[in-house]
Length: 230
Image (tube, rainbow, N blue to C red; front, side, top):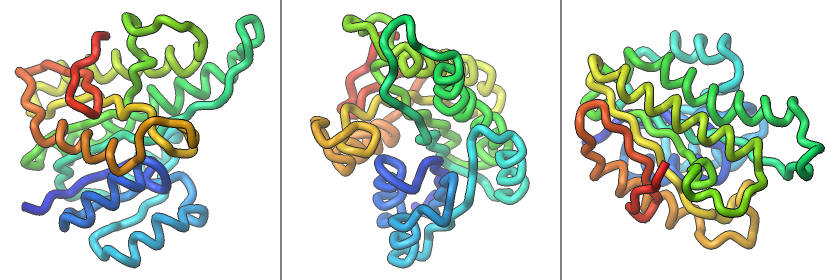
């Protein structure tokens, strides 16, 4: 059965692959990206699949989120907060507040505000699922190598925000899931990564399909189905 799926950061990497796989199955995909004029691969994919709608969205702009919220009025079965940010970070003692806050705004607050904005549309759908692409680097218990302060902290913050949403969205029947895609060969992950986007996305989609948490429960799961310790 066809569903309506909203994906952020859909212009490349995992977001583009999510869009491709879901559109190929006949779902209506609302593909969001920051700059449409730079989303050549996404536009090419839209030419192949007419069930893809492209929308411009800067997830750090509350004005832009509100505008999309007003534009997309139909029920949304699945929201995938995929847009993220990672950059090479300076050594300890040289980490800037600006860099730290940019990571928080994109990786944590962006996903939170987008989910918050589409509560009504999610609650009116059949699946009622909000997903956020996190990272095992946001796991406190799995941090054995240090470094990546801004990225790790922003993903840990994302996990906590989505955990709270999972509790507060119980009256709406909306479930929340956090996913770790693995180390993937994208512009963010680099060419030396272990997995290709199609394998990662296929795995995450399987987790999404089989996800059945208890009321208010939020799980943090790898693309291969393994649960991650917070």
